[in-house]
Length: 147
Image 1 (spheres, rainbow, N blue to C red):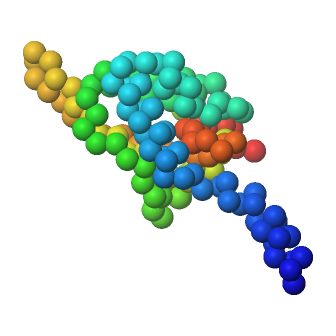
Image 2: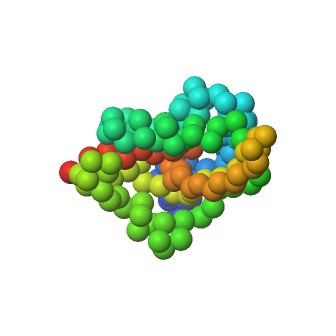
């Protein structure tokens, strides 16, 4: 019995790294917010998981990440996936209509609300992006052709 417990713990060790810690989640959110508000495209694009991604979908993701860049984020949080999110995370049609799936299975979503002010007035926007884990860090998965 004494030998079985350490072996069981060792067997479960790979699963311990599957869930990001609250500190990792906070760091991811902080990096995203800081890069967004500083108009730091390189850092934002560095959060994308691009291995195996469809080139057209990847360019679309890059464009969407930076479209409201420079505005003030009024709210940003990682949220759990609900049933509708889980269904969307299974994939769907890509920009050209071909079936797509995510390169990594999403585990959460990043919900961002921002506000932009100018001499002409102000506008607010809201967006969501799926988040996954790769090699112990949080990333934004990108779509790839479904096989």
